[in-house]
Image 1 (cartoon, rainbow, N blue to C red):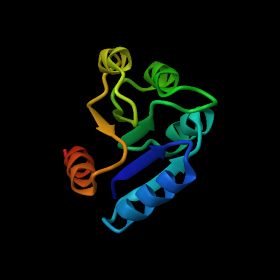
Image 2: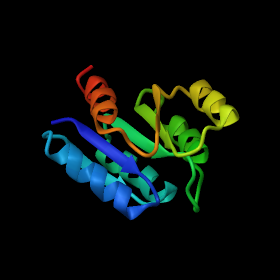
Image 3: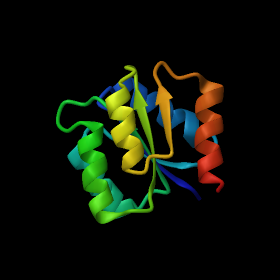
Image 4: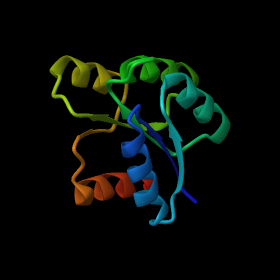
Length: 119
């Protein structure tokens, strides 16, 4: 079963996405911040990480930098409600495979995530 980690500091977004993907037979883990996310990545070795850009404890870019120190191949999709060209550029340099904007369009979210998990 494919494993997905959703990292977002907004609990309603985490729970919405968790329920959405569980119904699609994906094993879902959630983290509210960067440290928790890095611990889950080490423990569960997800196939894909949906990583919020703006969080309080650590930014998504900070989490991504740490993640790349321990795992160069894990697939990461950045999630943000803000269009920030500098962040997008840095995320791409760190190997993200996609960028999803909030609020989510369910069909787009499903298509992008399932395509990556089925690769």
